[in-house]
Image (cartoon, rainbow, N blue to C red):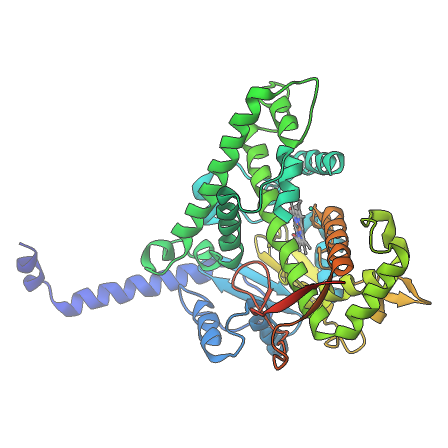
Length: 464
Ligand code: HEM
């Protein structure tokens, strides 16, 4: 039957029909796409700039690093770069001046998250946790979470203590599996599929199914813990974050829905684990690369705290060099180089250019940390830039946790964790290269949200 129809229709007619359809689609796309006066590579019909990015990932030595590929676009097009994918417009923002203008001076238009996250939507079509929610929901969730972290408050095990009131045994297979799930989610992303969801089905190598599977495993685990805790819940004795959750549950006047809070617990697990452990990995790498700095740090620790006492938060004031090292590692390595995407809910004027309404904004925190107008010789590892008259000083432009109202919610917790863990390690161990000839490359790999150091081996020698 079909072959009969095909025989009767001229192949030329079919081709003409298909080409007309394609031209109509391109014209429609051009008419509906917001005109944009921000420079950037010319988009292809339908797929936009996807081929440009794919081609650059094959050409460049930095193919494993999305942040570096974006920095190359900055060199060509300037501090704002416009990209398009299907019907989405993305704007990359570079340098302190522009990132500050977009995230801080225009905060009322950019403190939002895009809601096109295909993966998140598949799991919870209506709700989001604190990381992806918007509007009043986000305000309520963020306030609730900050208070809870302050009340109960560092890596996954510390988050576990805060949320569930108990820690894991390090050999616990459930803990090991959970860490594997989190690791996978941070090292893989569904960026392209979020822009062009059809690719989830067309691309046989799409990571989306595995990303969803990992996220579901984390959520199933949290659900099972909630069920366990429910049995021992006493409203008069709120012990941890989960008790706060159970207190809210089912209350008709509760501002926060159960699913929002549940997703926020998953967010804290995710946002608080990989970021902190990757920062510690970078810190270890720099300490074995610069043994003199390691020695100077340890001397200061032994002088102020000694060998026997455990460090406490207050010690920060008396350990300026240690603080400077931690800041400089976070500056030069920029663990979350592109922050988390923001959404423009209105047109935003920035120095004669317009970020159009509905554009997805990627602020390059890496470019802020390498901005020569703020940092002298920005590519050099120099902790002294955070010292003045031997005192630790905070520097404007330090943006490891981003800036504006969406600034990392776990900043204080992360800073305390990093300080206490780093000081405890140096108190107890001498750190060194496993292989004397290893020159320890410091360029990172970024396949997901965080930038990790390349694999390296090191020795922890207990101090005598
Ligand atoms: C060194 C460790 C960490 C770094 C470098 C880091 C960095 C960041 C960055 C760059 C953002 C995106 C901000 C933006 O959208 O502009 C962010 C968001 C966030 N972080 Fe962190 N983070 C760290 C640790 C933590 C910890 C320990 C927690 C939780 C306990 C946490 C929870 C969050 C949450 C909930 C958000 C989303 C905030 C919102 O959308 O309102 N982070 N973080």
